[in-house]
Amino acid sequence: MSPTTSADPGPASAPASGKAWFVTGAGRGIGRAIAVAALRRGDRAAATARDPRALDSLVAEFGDAVVPLRLDVTDADAARAAVAEAHARLGRLDVVVNNAGYGLFGYVEELDPQQLRDQLDVNLFGALHVTQAALPFLREQRTGHVVQISSSSGLAAWPALGGYHASKWALEGLSDALAQEVARFGIAVTLVEPGPVDTAWRGASAVRARELPAYDDARAAAWHPAGSTAPEAVADVVLAVVDHPEPPLRILVGDLAADAVLPITQARLDAWRAWEALGRSADHPPEG
Image 1 (cartoon, rainbow, N blue to C red):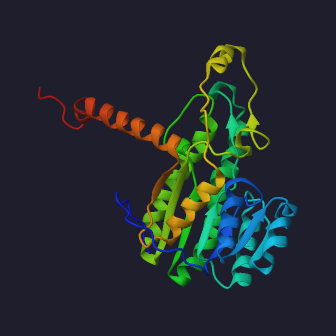
Image 2: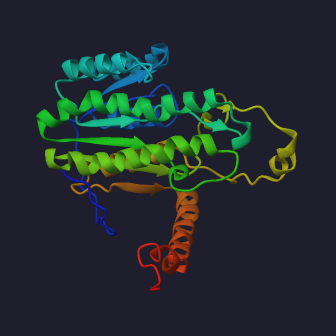
């Protein structure tokens, strides 16, 4: 299994049962939806949450197919222990989903530096801790798939989300390099990049910076997307990707993600081309 950036992935293979999953942030939202979708088709899953009581209903419904684990992804030692326990109880790990994360809202000037550190600690370093813990097992198997729940916010940027963007853009770069490093071991990496998803990301789980009056007008006029993608729909995409023999490195999920990111990407290409000659002049100074 190796990552690919093929523009036309072709038809996905039929869903395969029997995979062993490790899913962080499985107490609610996208992580919960992925765990449920995998379990309902007959796979097994180690599901993690800061408060394992959030996993009780999974255990009640799916029994021994679920390994419920307490995990704060900011704790590297805890991540290693949880991944090792999951591997011991499931016998293998086929798919590792780094989903745990939250949103940080505030204009850059408004951010407390500690808020940004905390954001990176969960959204970036949490994924790093779990990935590093899982890779020795995946390398030994010579197969596996690391799924990073990124965001369209890892490819584009909007006001009042600078801290969140910083975490997701960093995850994108880290994971792109990772994919190139581990392909030789038969390990795939996929960045899942949804737009707004119907979760608590903007609500109960969000952190907000102090508000400066200078940005009140901008806040009042800010655009908010009218619509969102269901977490269950994101889960369906994830299952299709991990079942595909040539999974993509990146996949935009939902209309809002594609409609936002594709034009922004084209605008970047246009700008680079427009300023290409000046940029190249740094290596080609004029004679004399």
